View (cartoon, rainbow, N blue to C red):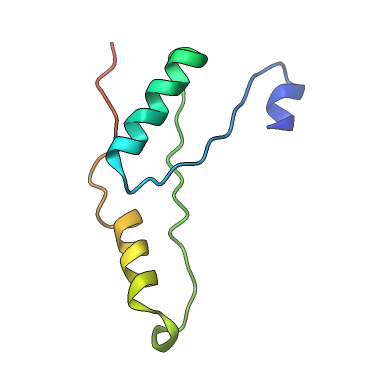
Length: 81
């Protein structure tokens, strides 16, 4: 964000559970109400965990699957003009 601002731009970081479509919709609504229309949105869920298979718990596997493989479209996204 510092580089963006140093070059005259504006940036804001927000955290959300990207697995929850309603949460994503709420985040997008909040951003558009407080800042304005989104011009760029980066969906970087970071589903790259590195565990040996014998150490990967069901919880970790399921979370990674939900974050990466289950998303067939951007959650909370709406068509834009």
